[in-house]
Image (cartoon, rainbow, N blue to C red):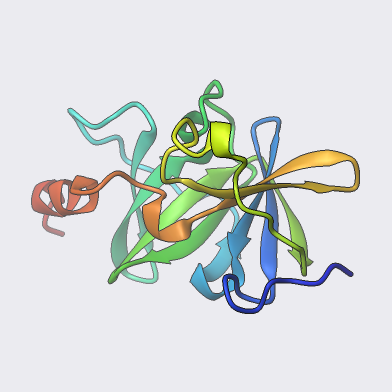
Length: 154
């Protein structure tokens, strides 16, 4: 097991494949992992928004996590429901690999601006680049409010 920086990060991370990328989500943001659910496309949404699904009786936006990271769209094998502020979103991922305690190093100076707000850190895990994601910044500011305003009434 790897040691985590207790001041800056939670103790455990959920490892996922998002396209070809290995990524880590903070465990405290993860609500559940589930099989893909039927998703209804939503007109005039960004390409990475696959649509809306019904999760535990609530409408939840489904986000193609690979597209957020600049990869082609994927056929999701799992959904990872995460908490973003006061809303739940479902990330469509290629695979869920399990929980891991890791050491996360901050981004090198040349990558800080290029990474955007989604990537909190880059580290190495078993000789593979690991992107440590900032769950609170997975979706751009204002997108959740815009989607909520257009959600159909059931």
